[in-house]
Length: 230
Picture 1 (cartoon, rainbow, N blue to C red):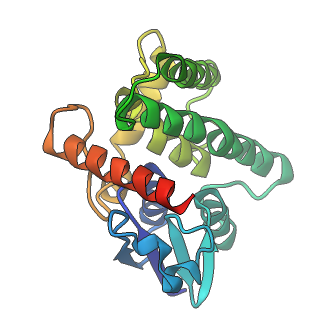
Picture 2: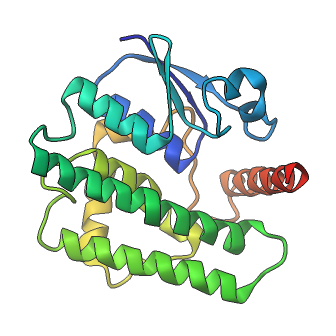
């Protein structure tokens, strides 16, 4: 298995690098400069027609969409996902919960709360409120489970890589003790710590930090690029 990860410092990118580190798989990293539009070049679109990160190439076989990559790796290695039908389904359900809910809602919260130069209070409230509702769903599950689907799995990795950035989205964690416990426990895992350093660690707790300003500037540039392409 010769693996090359095309990625950037984003929650979806971290999902794959964390999984690769947890699985102890050797891989090469190609950093995609989103601000320069490298994700829209013909060479990159040949492996990821959606022009987003991450993309994983396994011996010449490209896989795009972070959830699909996680499932591919889990099924190929037999790690971080059960092989029995119901156990696998539990993991996939919580993975889809992140893909269809947590990621899109937090992503939109980021756009309206952090990146748009004009503030639209109704949009901010909508996405932060839905994000908080989804957090409460996670908290309820974690009240009776150490991890989301039984044992630690790709579902935990996918959700954690987004939920850990709650403050950046303006979503409060107060009153969600089980979710806070889970966030802290996963953050202590050595493989997770290595994974969120690929290609670089971004710290967003302080909105006035250099990291935060850089992320905001890059995101606003991407929004402008998207407007020009539309």
